[in-house]
Figure 1 (spheres, rainbow, N blue to C red):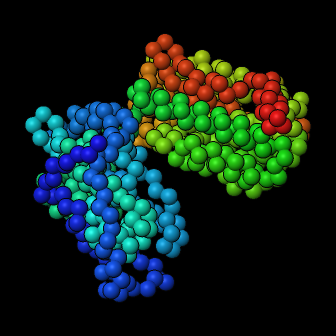
Figure 2: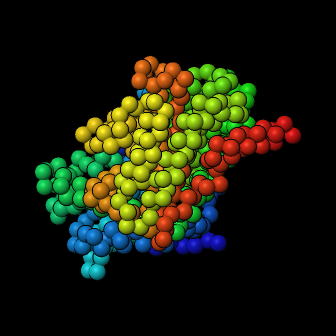
Figure 3: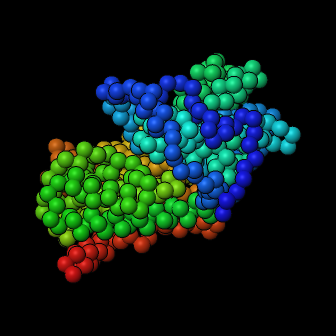
Length: 497
C-alpha cells in the first residue's frame, strides 16, 4: 500500500544529490560527456513511493535500543555500521554490518550510523543512511561504489524510517554537522568501524575508557538471547544440518577438502547470508590443526573428516557445529576409541551447563574426562591430579582449547564483555554457548602411540541455558559414533535414489 512520508529539513527530497564528493571511478573508466549525462537523466518511469515492510523483529531492535539507553542516561551514543573493505585494488569483500549496529537496528547497509541523542526520559534515535536520489542525479550511473546501476538501489531516508521503525532518519550528507555538534558536547563512540566517525572524536585516555565501556555494555546486553534470537539461531542450525548432509553426500566421491568446503558454502548462500566463519574441512592429520581453513588436502578413504562449519542466517545469527566423520562410512578401531572418549567428555560438559554454574565448569568436567582417558590410552604417563594441576596442564598438549564460547551474531559472541560477566561469570538462562571438546594427536608427537598419531576429533554442539538446565539446539544432528555411521549410510542411500 502506498504511503506518504513526513520529511524533515535534514532529509533530502527524492531529487536531491546523494553526496557531494566525487563519485568512485576505476582507472579504466572513461569520463561521461555532458550529452550522455543529459540523456541518462531523462525518461525514466517514476517509482511508486511505497512504504517498505518493517524489518523482522523491529520491536526487539527497539527494545534493545531502550535497554542501551537506560545504561547511559544523559549521554550521546554513536554506533556505526561500518564500511565495505577492500579485497584487492578497487574490489571489495561482500559487506556485513557491524554486529552491534545490526543488533540495535536490523539494518544491513554499509556506511550508516546510529546516533542516540539524550533527552528527558531516555534517548532519541537518529539513523543516518545513504539517500536515494533515484535517477535524478548522475551518480546513479557514474558512481561504481554506490550508483544503483552498479550495485543496486539504496533504501533511502524515508523508507529507512519505515523499514527500521526509527522515528528519525537523516541523510549521510548531514552526518558531519551532527558529529561536529557532538564533538563539543561529548559522546561515547563504538570505535573501529568507521574512520569517518573515529576521526571526529579525539581518543584521549578518558575518551578511550568511556568508549570501551560502551563496547563492553553492548557485548553484555547480547549475553542473554531473547526468543527472537533463539528462533534465528535454531533456523541457522537447521540449515547447517542440511549443509552437513550435503557434504556427506559429496564425501564419498570427493577428491579434495576444498570441494567439500564449496558444497557447504553453497547451502550457506542458498539458505542464509553466508558462512558464519571460514569453514574447516580438515581430513586426515589436517584435523590436528585447530583452525585448518586452507582446505587444500586430498580426501582419502580410511581417514576422518573434521567438519567445523556454520550457516549464517540472513538475520546474521550463526550456527557453529563440528562433526568428525569417517570418510569410508565406518570408524576404524583406533578412531572409534578416540571419538568415544571425546563424546564422553562432551557428555560430562553438558551436565555442567545449568544456571548458577561457572562458565568454565563444563570445561573443567570435559578436561577431567579427557585427561583420565589419555592416561588409559598410554598417552599421558602421570596421575590425573598432576596432569590437571594448573601449574602443569599437561593435557593441553593434546587439546589446546577450552570447550565453550558464547554464540550469537558473532561466532565468538560478546567478546568485549567483562571477564567477570563472561569467562569468570555464572551461566544464566538465555545464554547460548558451544560445547566442543576435542583431541588432536599430531603426526610427529612421540609421546603418542604410533597407532593414534594423525587422528583429530572434535564434537561441537550449540546449547542454550534454560531455567532448569540446558537445551541442545543441535541435538538433531547425529553425535554418537553409531548414529554418525548410520547417518552417513542413510545420506548415501538417499543420494543413490
